[in-house]
Amino acid sequence: MEENKKQSDTLRQRDKARKDFLELKKMQQENKDKSEERVAYSGEIKPITFAQKLSHFWYYYKIPVIAVIVAVALVSFVCAQCANREKSDIKIAIYDSNIVPDMYLEAIEEYFEQYCEDYNGDGKVVVTIMNCSYQAGGSSAQYQVTMQQKLQSIIVGDKETMLFITSDSGFEHLNTLTDINLLNPDGVKLNEDFYEKVTLSEEIAMPKGLSLYCRNIEGTLIENDETAVKSSQNGLELLKALSGE
Image (cartoon, rainbow, N blue to C red; front, side, top):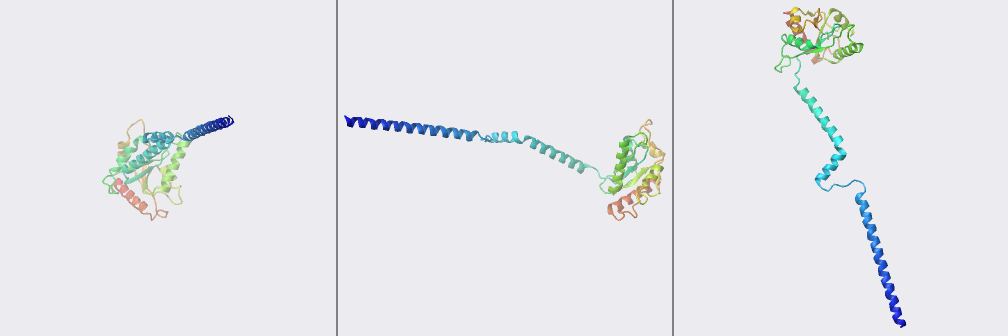
């Protein structure tokens, strides 16, 4: 009897131990599953397919990608414009306190092209006009300052612009801008033929009394510069052609 009781106690203890072991195992499995779930959903969700990866990349980086695409497009456009832009054979700056309307610039370029040669050998004759004129008493102070700065940049940094269109008062002013006279005095007065061909409207007048002058480079820092010397020679040739010599 006593032996049966001991066996019964042993079985109950074994069953309890087995039950406790199974409970412990279940709890360990549940903790493991929760841990894996936390790891799976912590941080970024990792894409599985290529489409998911692409969608994930676009979601996070679409703004930088768009910015790069726009920048590349702008650079390509600028490069294409520069590559297709015609090179000038002669560059002429207009400076006067009586404004030359921008609407006349193309006609002025075409007028001087008939006296110009293909100096750069590209098969085309191209004259480029840079307008630095303003209207004294009419243009705003800011506009006049802008034109003066544009003129200064041409004088200081542009070795190709050797011809200037200006009036007698403009000639005197330009010759005060540098230590030596900026312009040679031997200019060519623009005649009625010039005004007839470039004036597109009687209501918008061209300033009268304009002359074409060549820049003086002797004794300057660009006296021996190859580009400046060649541009000066080309400018003098155009002056001779214009004067009929």
